[in-house]
Amino acid sequence: MKKTLAILAAALTVFAASAAFAKPTPAKTLIAFYSWGGTTRGIAQEIARKTGADVFEIELVKPYSDDYNTVLKEAQRDQRAAARPAIKNKVADMSKYDTILLGYPNWWASIPMPIATFLESYDFSGKVISPFCSNGGGRLGQSVSAITKLVPNATVQHPLSIYYSGGDTLGRDLDAWLKKNGF
Image 1: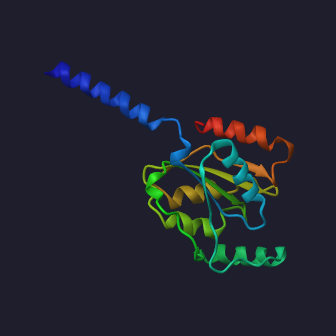
Image 2: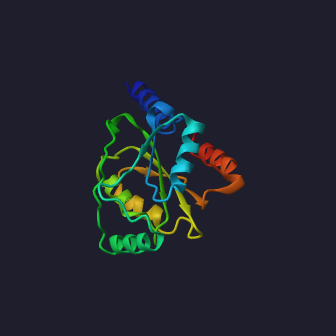
């Protein structure tokens, strides 16, 4: 009996380990992103082309200003207030996704507040979130720790910092990041 239980326990351990490191599939992967000026959108579209994953653009009920200087002030105001701007669209069935490739621009060394709204709108328990962040030199800033705090029951892994739109190395950088994240 003890031997049977030991074998069963070992088999369950192997099964759990293989399930935890299962290769992401396009059918169970969502690319969710917020893009103000289109840079992050372009990166998300390239990731979709490479992976075949579903794409969801986070859009606001009341969009930020189209003016760069004004949006900087609006973004800083929202971060200081820990605002949660209303999102006008929803993911139809978040439960079907195991992996979320989460894209956003670095605003004031962190995530834009629409990302916080998105992360608080769904149950990410047991899901894997792999962030990708477009930036003008601030790299990831504190964005990964902000995401981790908002989804404590998810696994946040292997982020990617992309300088502006990624330039000539974007394809290679995305390939390396996707490989690191199991694609």
